[in-house]
Amino acid sequence: MEIDKKTIKLLSSDTRVNILKSLSRRRKTLTELASEFDLAKSTITEHLSKLEESNLIIKQETGRKWIYYELSSKGEKLIKPKTPTPFVILLTLGIIIIIFGSMSLGIMDSGSSQFQSAETTAKPSIDGIVHEEVNQFNPLPISLVVLGLIVVVFSVYKIKKLKS
Image 1 (cartoon, one colour):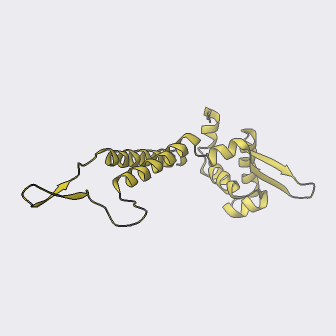
Image 2: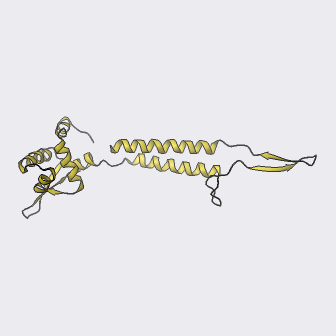
Image 3: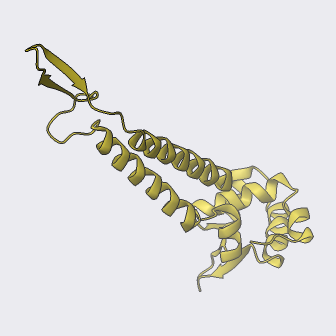
């Protein structure tokens, strides 16, 4: 969402930002906002008119004596930005890579919850002595787990950065 200079100047007031945050929880009347912020109704009215001019809030007349104020779609996007889908997909992909790598390592064995080390096989030699042979270590599963962790950490970092 693009924010112009007028909107930035408008948001330089803590009271207006707090009004937007308050309206993000639910719609409210002028009286509710004035008592919540312990300000005069005229002061709140001035802030609300500026927010309404910038299309950050909408005035909702109910047909009764109450007039409610609520966030517009522009105000919603400003106060509660949605998490971009690509980062959610990237996070999910990272978790899948970690699971696949862990299963390849034998860490997440369906029959056992214990850590599995490299397999050894016993092979008798010509002289009758049994020698244990250690199977070759495969670096691919560890690489997958590390790659998955990097992808997950990057995704979480980007999502948190966008939300703040």
